[in-house]
Amino acid sequence: MTDNTTLLYFAGELTDLLTCPHDKGTVVYLVDRATSIKDVIEALGVPHTEVYDIRMNGTGHDFSLQLIPGTQITFLPANQSSNYPVDVTQATLLRPPLNALRFLVDENVAGLAPLLRALGFDTAYHRTWDDAYIAVLAAKEERVVLSRDRALLKRSAIVYGRLIRSQIVDDQLVEVLSHFSTPMILKPFSRCLRCNVVTTPVNKEDIVHLLEPKTRLHFNMFRRCSACKRIYWRGSHHEKLIERFERLGINIPLHSTEP
Image 1 (tube, one colour):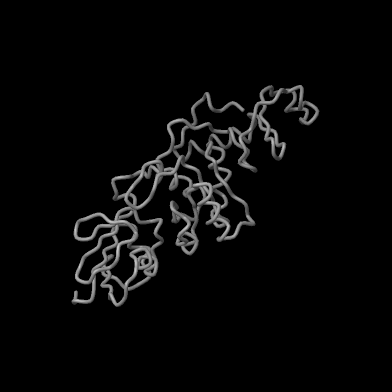
Image 2 (cartoon, rainbow, N blue to C red):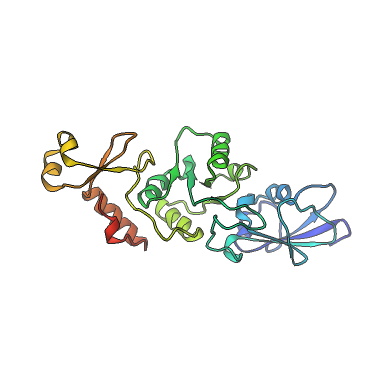
């Protein structure tokens, strides 16, 4: 290290995100102009959403830290920080708290949307939303953005996010649930898988004319989405979802499985 450089160390899974030459996560960075640490790490390939602790010579700092030649800065991922699994309702040096854990899914991990909704998570998604709109909506509604798009997660309007590593949707779901501290009380099968709207119980006699003969014969409890009018009941689709979750180690309380 020379008088006009600083050592940047990216720990753990952050090393794999670097797009510049490095020695096992250590980058020798030339300090030739004033710039914030956020701009520096993102220029090296790491979205700011993936960094959960910044330490310069052992002292914690936020993203406004300016590089100083001759110093050493360490960046820690979530799983090496004190806030893991990540609790978005707790303030940290890098991020303010959110009111609740709510997600926003982009097109390249769209398969997460119905699965997260089935588990009861408020999960916004629409295939027509572009990066600019997603960033604005995430800021406005205080949502955690889930994506495989680094450029999207580098947008300054996005405070919380996760660069999804997995390519298989079931593995992506496990990744998300492992990464974030989820509420103790969830209401599985309470949201419309299509609209994200909370469904409401509906009397069978009010919808009986809309049901198939076998459904009309064998089921008596139903919920309905007020937006798209889709009807939900505990049929084979319901059971298959429960089995799928159980294979992933996600247990659904029995009292939560009724429509």
